[in-house]
Length: 249
Ligand code: NAP
Image (tube, rainbow, N blue to C red; front, side, top):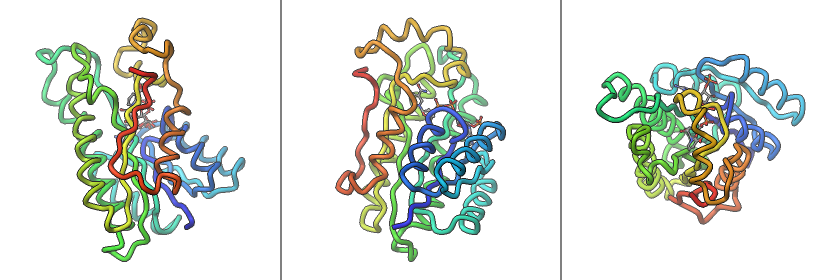
């Protein structure tokens, strides 16, 4: 099968590392991003040059239905039938206790992390499912170890949004497997990307290392390797699994 993948939030961090691995494995790619066009366009250009694959950067807020629909229509027209989706786009909000959080923060967090994953999964299923004449495919969802650890005092809202991703992965995997779509998830631990600075947590990373049994932060490429395996035929009997990539945390 010729592989065509959409990776959301692929301009930077873990998504960029997944894009790198997928392009080298022979996938044609749509690299979604929200705001940082420079990072996504530079990555797309470099991967085109280095791998010869078709790689297109696509701006869309995954929380916005019209933008998601437009992005999938563009993939249909410019790349062809989708065979893989990585729901990677995700945000945290500044570290806080629950009683200091407001509703707007929760709406945005759940809109991006949960609604974004639901919207993109729906559009992918409509294209990949044999029920709709598709050829099957694979979906990998980025959850977090926070889904199980809960992130008390930091961002219980983010952790709860990732709990929703775990449950969605289990349900969707069983709903879609008969139609040729394998759905799985990855739970990263603390990975060295810019997401921590966006949550005002950058300075706390050295202290956080003490909570990681392996004794260091994870790298984006270490998460990407797990995602690539779950997408690949090597994982053909792996359905509804959540793979922890967390250094023992
Ligand atoms: P990151 O470095 O902050 O990068 C986030 C990426 O998502 C960027 O490309 C960003 O686009 C994109 N994005 C943000 N909001 C978006 C939206 N509304 N629509 C489309 N794209 C959007 O994050 P990361 O650390 O690589 O995290 C990637 C995923 O792994 C997230 O789901 C996160 O929750 C999960 N995760 C991360 C860690 C960790 O320690 N890093 C641990 C567990 C789970 P722009 O470049 O345009 O801003």
